[in-house]
Every structure is written in C-alpha cells, then in structure tokens.
Length: 122
Image (tube, rainbow, N blue to C red):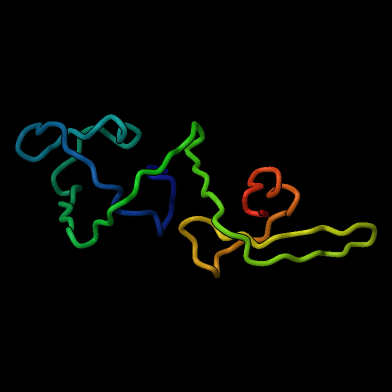
C-alpha cells in the first residue's frame, strides 16, 4: 500500500512535487514526504506535470482552526418548521450559509441557532 490504496485501481500518479536533486543521469531525489515510497526514482517512473493557467482558481483567504476546519457563517434563515414527535416538538430553521446556494441550505435546530447567532432572529 504505497499511496493509500492497493489493487488494480491504485493511482499511478500522486500529487505534483518538486525534485530536490538530480542523482546521475537517470535518477532524481524526491522530497522527504515521499519517503514512505522511496526517495530516489528512475526517470521512467516520473511524469512531467504541465499546468494549465486557465484551471487555476483564485481563492479567498480562509481562517482555519487547529483541526483544519473552518466555519461558514450563516447569512439568512429561509424557512421554519416544527417536527412533532410522540412526546415533544422540535423547532427547526433552514439556514443559508456564506458561499452556499439556496439548494444547499441545511436544517438546524432553532434553539442552537438562537444561542450562536441571535442577530438572525431579530
């Protein structure tokens, strides 16, 4: 299991990487993150990556926490509903978050949303 998968469908090419050093005429040294596979590869095992400048998407800066997660802030509440169970009723709101389409809006508990984002209910 070199790259996380094994068998017929294992990937032949991994992410692009920089070559650190040329060793001889037909071997190259790779970065330490590839050390699980091997640090030196023969030329025939490498594939040149040619990037297309039109495929590069400009990204906004995203604040990421320690667990590499980010939180999208809610923008608006689209709908409300009350689900009736046997003994209780649960109020839910449909929340539209930043950078989402209307179709991607999710149902959240109204009580939790009022605690975290009271400005949406004013």
